[in-house]
Amino acid sequence: MTTGADKPALQKQVAETVVPISRAVNVSVEQPQVVAMCKKHAAIISAIETLPSGGTRVVLMNSADAAKIIKAFGSKVMTGTVARTHWMRAV
Figure 1 (cartoon, helix red, strand yellow):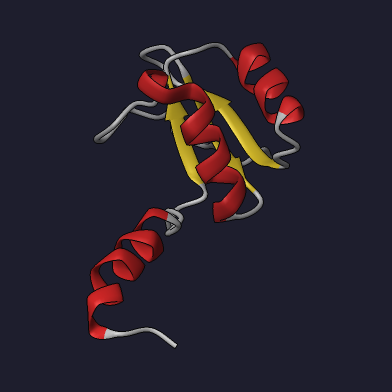
Figure 2: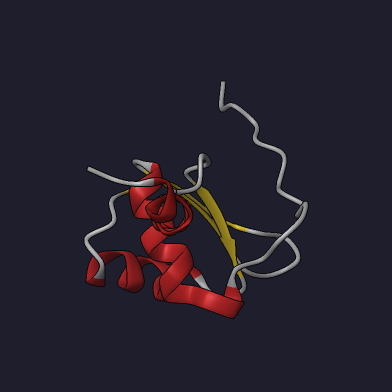
């Protein structure tokens, strides 16, 4: 049973375990490094693409895997909007 005094510590613990909603991660490294890191952390890739400005966009199978990769790449994670190549369907 928790008391009122335990509430701030419990809220902090819950806040630290929240995973991101998005499964997509943009990182400033090349695709082979992303694939290797995902393999190392058993994070399954759903889609991957090279960004025109450099770096890689990877979409993982779930947000928990995305959280592992974000933590693994640290400062190499790109924030904000990035330019992507327009996808064209082959006819």
